[in-house]
Amino acid sequence: MRITCPYCGERDVREFSYLGGEPGARPDGMAADAHAMFEHVYQRPNPAGPIREFWYHTAGCHSWLIVERDTRTHAIAAVIAAANREVQS
Ligand SMILES: [Zn+2]
Image (cartoon, rainbow, N blue to C red):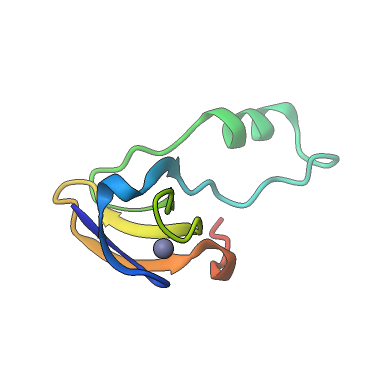
């Protein structure tokens, strides 16, 4: 698999470290109940299809990236810098 870093260009996946799926928006800790916080911290979707996930360009520019990848085919639809992402709920 190859990932196109927005800063370095197309690179082998071995240059990157995988963090996991992008979590949704964090509930308001003071207003949310324990169940909502448990769901946010411990429960992660595991879809067969498109997913947004965090990758770190370890052997490159040391940037955090959001990769939109199809888990069935590993086809990558988009890569953006995590700093430029919009949080999805
Ligand atoms: Zn890079």
